Structure formats: structure tokens, C-alpha cells
Image (cartoon, rainbow, N blue to C red; front, top):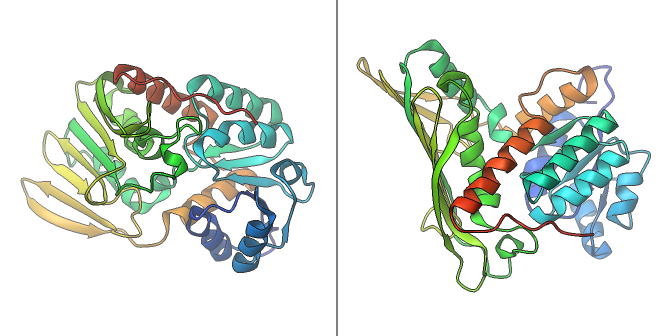
Amino acid sequence: MSDKGREPLRIGVLGAARITERSLIVPARATGHRLVAVAARDRARAEAFAAGHGVERVVGSYAELVADPEIDVVYNPLANGLHGPWNLAALTAGKHVLSEKPSASNAEEAAEVRAAAAKAGTVFMEAFHYLFHPVTRRLHELLDSGELGEPRHVEAMVAIAAPPDTDPRWSLPLAGGALMDLGCYSLHALRMLAPWTGGAPRLAAARGGERAGAPGVDEWLDADLEFPGGATGSARCHMAYETMDMSIRIVGSRGEAWAPNFVLPQMDDRVVVRTPEGERTEHLGTRSSYTCQLEAFAARVRDGAPLPLDADDAVATMELIDACYRQAGFEARPRTRI
């Protein structure tokens, strides 16, 4: 069991996505939670996934999984367009839900997910795992301490090499695009600075580029934001970049802090701080941000412990994503029917 005398979470997994090993399987093993069942469109794939990752059993469909009485938590790592429909189904079935980001295809659907969570009275959270790692917590501490002075500018970049053309992240019907898959981290990280910047940022401008051969799908998108306190922000994403870049830089009136990989800090746990007193590099630990996330989620489910993320936050992020798309000349992502 994950804690002495405590029952583990009983988790069901939608799909057999590659990310699930890193995002859930390893964290569940580390924290002692049960992987009760998995469902995939291809049963043979689900059976191989269960055998390879120690999942207790396979069920025949997503619908069967969300209805399973032995499961109390549903993890949803499906393609973006399937987040909203299956989050709604799981919440309607009375399950707690940990959903990969974003929570839905657009703000209207995200609001429906929020309403379903409120009606169910269960825990719903988008998997912005970076927020639970000591790297991000340290960035916030530096702002809180005043060491950096007043925030002046923040820039976040999340970029990867291009997935194959057949990848669902390039599919408009499945709510694909660089902003949906990557830029949501950049936007969210800037939104989380509201306590130190006078409030939530507003979109000032956005521009993007379409993926060749994928009409309506953004290969890259840059957003300029403005905070009520006068600071500015840059949230950038690129899904066909020459290298991986998942960095954030916070510039204040007295100094700056830079984290080279705030999204996956287990790969690079540095925070570099520069002030008039000099430069130093702090190492915050390579423990998985996904493990930190699962611990926080479990504490909420079991004990009602506070979380920095909820369905309201998911709607606010999705509203900003939709606004970026409109400003950059794209349509908001269409919802997927199941």
C-alpha cells in the first residue's frame, strides 16, 4: 500500500498510450497504487500493455472501464480530442479523473467537464505535473522572497522534434496542434504567476504557422501576454523544432531565474539565478514530476488536501488557448464525438 494502513487508489487506464509508462505506471509503482484495468481499441494491444506493465486485467471497452465498480480513478491519456468525451463519461460514472492536458478540445467542452465534475462531487485534475516538482516550486519561492524584485518579463518555450505525419497530434479532428500538445504548458506556466504579477495575464497578440499537409493544424504558435501589474510574457511552442526546448525564464527588477527544463525537470533539475550578488545554480532533484503529481492527486482524493489545479483552472487555460488560436488565424479545435 502507498502509505502504512492506507488503501491504494484503484486506477483504470484509458488506452495504451506510450506516455502512460512514464506518466502513470512508474509513479503508481513508486507510490503503491493499484493499476486495476486497462482498455484499448485493440484488445491485443491492451493485453500486451497489461502484461508488460503489471496491470491487473483488461476490459473490453472504454465504456466498460469507466463503469467498472472496482475502479475509483480514471486516467485519460487518449488523443486530445478524446479527452473531453471520456472525461465527461468518467465523471458521469462517479469516478475521480486525472486527465492529460488539455481537459477538452475547446472552452465550451471544458465548461461541460467542469459542470460534470461539480455534479459528480469527485476530483478532476489536468495533468500539469510540472507544477508539483521542486523546480517550479522554487521559481515561485524566488518570486515570493523578492530576491528577483518585481516581475518584468517571463518567457516560456516548449518545443520538440516533429512527430511522424501519421501522429494524431497532427490531426485536426482529434484536436491536434502545437498549442494543444505543447503550448498549453507555456500558457499554464505564465497563468500560474498571477499571484506575483497582479493577476491573470491577458492575450495581447498571437501568431502561428500551419503544418504542411495538415490544414488548420498549427506547427508553431507564439503568444504575447500582458499582466495587470505591468509585466509582459511570451508563451511559445513548436512541434517541428530542431531540438527539444522546455525552458522558462523569469526576469525581475533585481535579477532573473532560468530553468532549462521546467516541463520535465527530472531530465534537468537546474534553476540558474542571476542577481547583482552574482550567479548560482541550484539543483532541485531528479525525482519524477509525475510521481510528485500522483502523490498530490492521491492526497486530494483521500483526504481533501488542497490542489493548485481544478476544473475551473482547466476552463481558464482552455479559454486562453481558444483566444490564441483565434488571434493567430486558426479555429478553435473541434470537439470529437464518440
